[in-house]
Length: 252
Image (cartoon, rainbow, N blue to C red; front, side, top):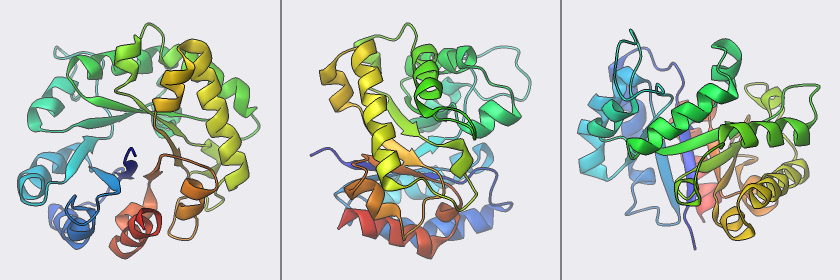
């Protein structure tokens, strides 16, 4: 059985390295592979803390790390940006791409996200691609359009390295999580779209995660009732006790 993916997206938090160390230290025993064989927990801190935390926790605890974003080029004159090659050389294994906050606040288009996915794959990073509808949009149209454009030109071999997150934008940070039945419908639609674009076999093998106001109370429902292969956890991943509960609730 494939391991469930639990992705901790810290976003632009915490403000101090000492706080980041403390948070990760508190959950390290629970997320270590030795204690949690059923799930793979991927920690995605801000760029500025990534190297330090990996030095201290990757080798000692066997933790898995990812980045929250990357550029679409491996290097060049792009002031203030971080290339996927830098992240890979640092030791990161995953990168979140297409998050709704990147699309909304920074104007990232599906074409830009497509370039970022291809660059990440060149650098041997595993993309975690986020798709989902905004309030008032039809889920099917929004998700199908995003998947078609975001995955344009990617081979079956490349697709095997990608996880898809369904994140209904209207649920993020609102406390109004998507109901499990609706989430299941979205997951099935993602797989139908992947079947159309590639094959039923690839669609069945692709990890489909849920993200959007995940907490310890609803986490297990998204795995058991909505049949998701994992979770993208935002605010709750910044609270050690809550995040540990999420891990335990879906792992046992």
